[in-house]
Length: 123
Image (cartoon, rainbow, N blue to C red; front, side, top):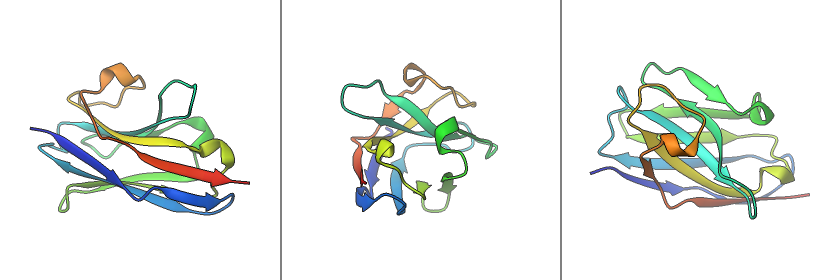
């Protein structure tokens, strides 16, 4: 049984940093893609970053150079380090897992979801 639990969200001023974490159980990192999505009020859920079993990463264009996705296999934890945060990064951030070996860009491609953690960036 797969379970994903996010933590680490919060409020920060523009230009600041946050790291969100996702404790994963029942997931085989070598065979799954793990990703972070976000959803702002009134907007569709969008992929932010993903990492596959070979540690290949993909990022949304607007976060490249600012966000870094990583995973600690020993701790079964996925991370998203967010630097130089902007008000437009404000959203609920979700951890997701896909049984596919590659990281797709659509939410429909992911089988398991966490409950989300709120990130708020003020100007």
